[in-house]
Image (cartoon, rainbow, N blue to C red; front, side):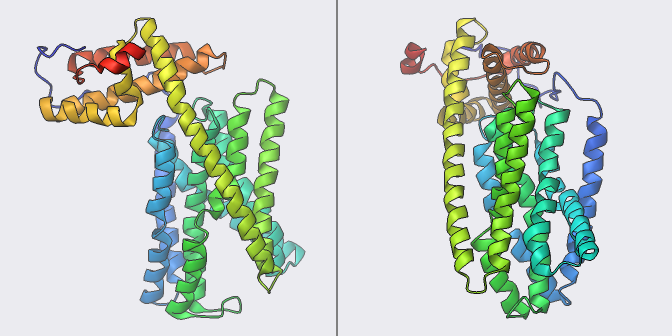
Length: 394
């Protein structure tokens, strides 16, 4: 499959540059880095409202506990066709800083302008302010770079990460408030913060990602629609569903002291979460089939060797290929295999979209550019021996 007698490996792989770079990319990265820094400062200031070091520490600590698990969920969904890290970083920052700032501004203004109670603000104004503020990131991403969100799974990933960022900052405020105590909290101090963490951090960490997922699914569906009217209507319905789910959750907490409405809302949203999880898993399984089908077709055209397909499609074989390269040829060889796998996946999904008749910005140009990058790696590529059972299949 590959020539093991090629020249010695370099000390490092050459830096990879995307074949089609967007204008203003560097400026946006710097802008979001500054926004993230402002968010860190804002989060610390928000935690300081707890009043003392214990409250500040608990507010930050409890807010961080769900993050690794939540990130793991969306990392798993995003493994086959990983989204650009800069966009995922921007999604988290947008949710935690920009969306929070927009939502708070609208909620404070509406509460003062219409003399609303806390319950009315939470039940009606908060969903109307927070969901559009979160969903705006997905909309702007779609408008700026249509190739970034190209399906339901991508929409779910970005919606989830925006929701995680929003919930992270919001939770810091809730934990700080429950530590200081108020009319809304029966307990104060460490007990108050802990009880709030149990409700928000343990039993409902996916609430905000769930609300925004409705719009994520909608924009993922809108990508494949050719009619502008259909795309607008699909996104509008998705936004309304996001707002409705959020209002159902907040309203059940605000207007039913018995807790029955909250339990019903919790069970209903929990069931919906299971449905969305099934949809996400089905979409992810479909990605495997699409990848194998596209790679098989690409191999028939002579762009790759058929024996490479298992090492480019199935995670167990992909991992085995990287391990083989590292154990026998070193770290740089393993990096070359990993980059080759990533390029092949992106090329295969893009090629499948084009063959299916879907419009992709610079699709043909990007496909050939990705193939060129793959060919450039071939002198460094060290894959395991061919799997006879799989090569016969292809």
